[in-house]
Image (cartoon, rainbow, N blue to C red; front, side, top):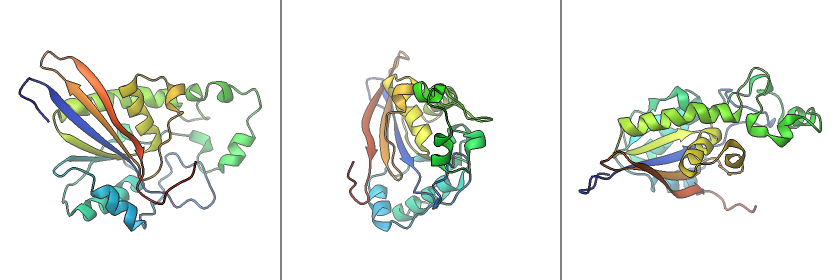
Length: 215
């Protein structure tokens, strides 16, 4: 959205993919698991809130492609989402494909993971702090490339936490406190003045449209 006073607002509509088919509760990270897109009511409710004529993005993992496809179908839109590798989920290395209870249960009580989880990388994997360093420049570049547009990005919990961290000036430890549920919507505006000054505004965080949850 461009205004007559020289302000340009780029609106990011961040969507976490639909739930994955993961009966064994594995740490899946970059495993290419299928999405369960069978919650028609949640899909329809979310789709009804998304903008028409937007730029659509997805990651290389099929769960984002499948989620984007059902949302676009519900909207009767024909956009072809661009694949953005920089927005892919955190790489959990040797932990991927193992039950989460097994992974965390094997960590010693005084392992650095428990005190500084954002700085901790699984063997052969990527820390959340590294995700922040990867995602931030991608968001800035895409905001420039599509300035003044609506951008619908179907991505992952780690990516969306990184986007919120950029907007709210959070470090990794604080960003990890944010809940990002499947099929949730997070709305972030990037505002750019004609002088080049930039600011961010979070208008919604982790809105869900399925069965009500008790936390």
